[in-house]
Length: 134
Image 1: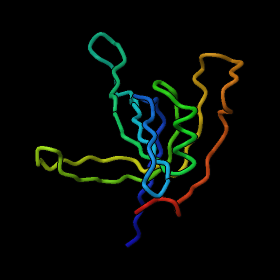
Image 2: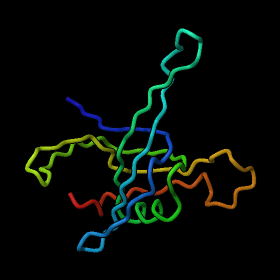
Image 3: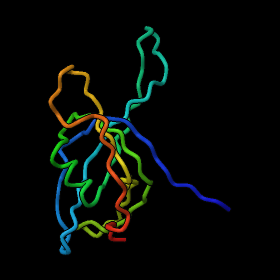
Image 4: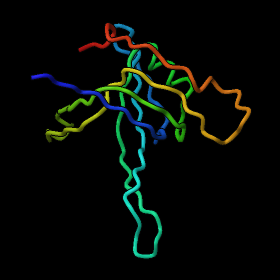
């Protein structure tokens, strides 16, 4: 049976990226995005939205680029795969969450200024699967 694990999301960063490095020198950036999904209207006719908060992890040059050019509120398009992580916290409780492991991303225009001197919104980063440490 064939399998597919591919996720495409467009949203805004919920916090500034956190950049760190593995003992081997590989850059790792963690950040969150918020994705709004319209789900209809309420009794007064106002549009309702469901907001999803998703954690994303990126590696290598992508991680360094995201940490340099993105901050809280910045729009981003991400492509990656869904991953389920489990761990034990400091109190010995078992914890788990789903997150996206980034494969590619694109800068998006925030629509705030027409003459933005920021990094191009059409840049797409390459995939560096050889650098992912798992």
